Amino acid sequence: MLEQNRSIFAYESPRRRDLENLQNWVNNKASIARDETAYLSKPQDLMTMLSPRDDALARLTPLTERLVSGLYTLCKKPRSTVSRDPNLTLLSESILQRLTRAIVASAVVVLLLVPIIIINALASLSLRMMVIVVASAILITALSTLTNAKTVEVFMSGATYATVLVVFLAGNGVKAT
Image 1 (cartoon, one colour):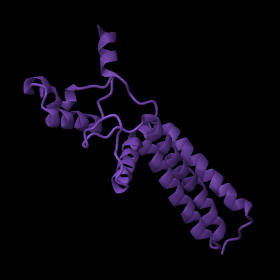
Image 2 (image 1 turned 90 degrees about the vertical axis):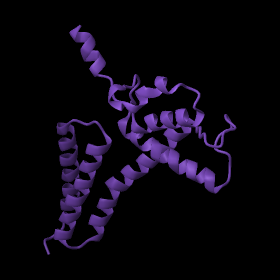
Image 3 (image 1 turned 180 degrees about the horizontal axis):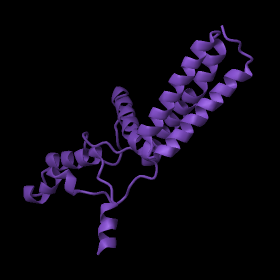
Image 4 (image 1 turned 45 degrees about the vertical axis):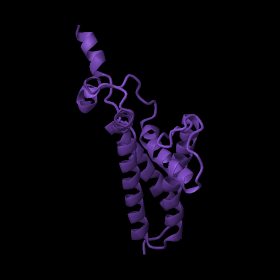
């Protein structure tokens, strides 16, 4: 019994977006009795059977979906070929995943390489150190909010990144000004 309780509590809560989508569908279609949809008003009692493999992608995919949906609206193209309902948006999950991965990869490249370019362009040692502090803080914040990394993993990643930037700074033969 204890093992069963532990496995039940291991399930995650559903994402707010998924609940809103289901509530919107029920409210717009009204094809289900109100008594049978009362569970939607108690999200603390709900759980999801399938959790995302990559939490960062799961958090950013809805943003990408809204972006693509907005582009469809601007171009006056139909959002879906699956349904004739203009309120229904069905986008290919694989395309959304690829777009989201491309956005994340671009952000990572910017996050990791732009500080190096800035450090290389600055002459003042104090400004260079400030860039290292800010870049490390941004990296640690991004890791903490977008991933399910443990505290020690976030700490080690931030320390390693700051060390690489300091080594890069020292390798440039910079003299204090």
